Image (cartoon, rainbow, N blue to C red; front, side, top):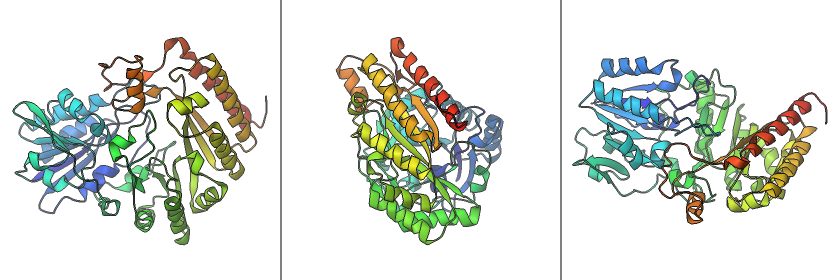
Length: 440
């Protein structure tokens, strides 16, 4: 048996940002010695399609495993990465008509059945976590009906198997750092840390727009801080990785787990940095100080609304004061801060837009003297099937229930779409003045 792991292209064309394929690397480490394997991250190739063509023809795998990480780049873009998945599957089927073509990854988990309809070349796909069932998937005579969470084809119809239990986080496989070399991802990134690391999976917050519970489950599963830092230390000492991105939906929740990780890093005197998304209402000055001592290089906040109405509508369970208090803490500490907000939300009006601008001015004022505000990122809300916000919009007659959300659909009424651009312009001038040490 031969298997080819393929990370399909899922990044901005020409952006040059590299993200280590953590999921595929863990699956690759499970492959027994009796199975020959090869790997290809198409995101590392300036022109990946001839490379995939050569791999398929030269290696001639029995199984082609396609990892589909991102549906689209978000940030209001109408670009979709589904064409990458379709082309990779079509090319694989053309060259290897008898191969087993399977798919997985976070994006596939969200739209598994729909993607199987869209890409008929895919024989089967795994929903959610593949680690518990992967060895069954690569058996020569595997029984698709016996694999939990598998979508497969039977007599021309799609069959969805019941989901199995989630993996215990301390049982997640090690990375295959021989096949997927961390060193190949350390150069060129300007905006994001290339190496992700997992402290937990799942989220119980149930924010209105978010699909993390669909991917990782609605309960938080924690990984041992010791095992977490063991992996960090190995990647640092053996592969020169000095910057990590915590892939957790919320880094500092639960607080005691995050603090334990930071103290473990500090105890070992690891010279590393890390970034991640933090929750404003579970951050205080003492926790921030512990995090900075452990190597916190940049903090991302996803408050997602600048108005009381927006916070409530998105079910953020945050207040404007929570957001402002967190801003004051990071400004006092000087840690580089990025803020994300969704603009032009449902049922917002001119009064809300004025409130949003006033709130933004407060945030800019807090960070001005510290000069620690890296960026304020504004987006419209991307709608996903099954998300609480999507269901609410359908129930209120604000969204057609038959709309196909596979490709990018944003809630952004055209008559008020200018608000996002006005806030961006306002924020841009404030950022320039801050860097120049001036004040309007």
